[in-house]
Amino acid sequence: MNFWQTLKKPILVLAPMADVTDPAFRRIIAKYGKPDVTWTEFVSADGLFLGGYDALIKDLAFAEEERPIVAQFFTSHPDMMRKASELARTLGFDGIDINMGCPDKSIEKQGAGAALIKNPKLAREIIRAAKEGAGDLPVSVKTRIGFNKNELETWLPELLAEEPAVITVHARTRKEMSLVPARWEHVKRAVEIRNSMGSKTLIFGNGDVTDITDAQNKVMETGCDGVMLGRAIFGNPWLFSNPQHIPSIDEKLQVMVEHTKLFETLLPHKNFSIMKKHYKAYVNGFDGAKELRMKLMETNNAREVGSIVLDFLKNNSIKSGS
Image 1 (cartoon, helix red, strand yellow):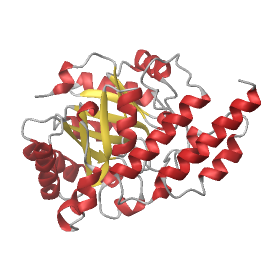
Image 2: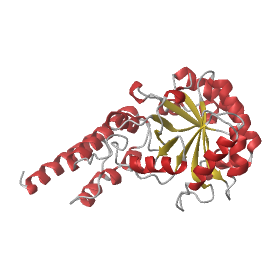
Image 3: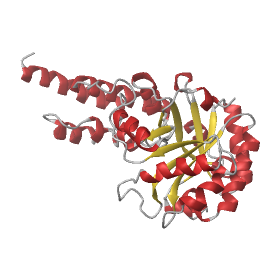
Image 4: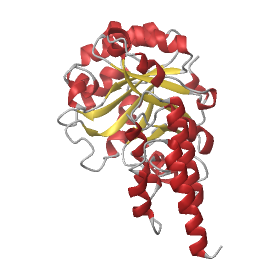
């Protein structure tokens, strides 16, 4: 079933981000500020079947409270995408997404990610293969407006011709990476192209969205069906909940500890330094934040993190006279 058609617009979703939206962080987000739809981190379809990477299967683990959840894959081989989509269906995912926008050079060398913008014929073959493997699950695409320049007028119709359920348009070229402001007028143009073709594909915008209010404003300005938020989630699992909610220092630090424990439990195969990337976002904007961050960066496990945070909160309580 195409669950996308059952969602109320505008649809606000969480972006797939490598070493960020892993099972631990997604579990925290589902608890404190659930988006309309969640994506996994992107996973190599080739790695799943050619590399024997058992860890990749662990990265695809999800909890029922995360639904609806979409598995994102990258590859330049249609047969690998077909097999990955079959696997996602077997694992119980609600949808499959194809990454056609990642600017990482190692992925481009494989002909995957943003490199597919330069090969529309192959891109379309990969979408068709994903649909074959997905069965009745909806297939979507995340991409950019072009490779070295804006190619939306030619690139988007190629994708729309394959009738994916959703196309998420990151409003920058691959060359621009995230070095320039996202240009949402291109999202508006994407909607116009979709409408002119009489397509039923949903168009989402992505890039530089600061919060839910900003997302809603961008929907009004562009007419898109939804917005994908990415970097705004850092240190803020409450992003998709009440926009007026401002967590206290105590609340942020306690959730950070909870997040760390989940990381240690769910992802024992991953380096603890990946978890530390979140600490800069959780621990900032208050007295003593820098010193606390420095201590947290020296930790090696959740127990040490919990102890340091507990000491900080006790001392902070004494200093504040409470």
